[in-house]
Image (tube, rainbow, N blue to C red):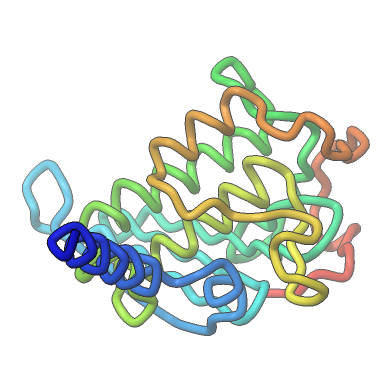
Length: 213
């Protein structure tokens, strides 16, 4: 009996440590940080692929540079409706979410979402240093960004920093990206409200009150 109690106590301690080791949803959403991850790019390793992420509360800015001359920039406000992406460093294009992005989706929004996911995975999560559960590391910050992007752009949930955090109206499951990706593609949370279908328009003609570059 004493041996059983000892093992049970040890198990409780381990579970408690594991639970406290990872950042929670509100820490991710409320965090402010700037992080840069770089690595030598193909084919000759002479130039670097650079991913820079800046986050201030709900607003995420993603800058990506590949082989020096290929540059992309995205701005995402995960607390702002309708769900959309601001794309471009000069003339900003607004891409609004129309529906779930499946494997056969060809709209500009879904293309941009796939592009963002690939950049974060290939040039961020794979090469970032540190533990993904720690927001003080590059890996943790990139992972936090990935979860927010998947929840807002992928699932279509407009997040909130007030009134219960991400559980109202949505929540970010802190699980592996592969698991989250699978659940999103299968169409989790079909009850979410879809935004009306609107063609992409330049920000010079349409600025839905979001943060500017």
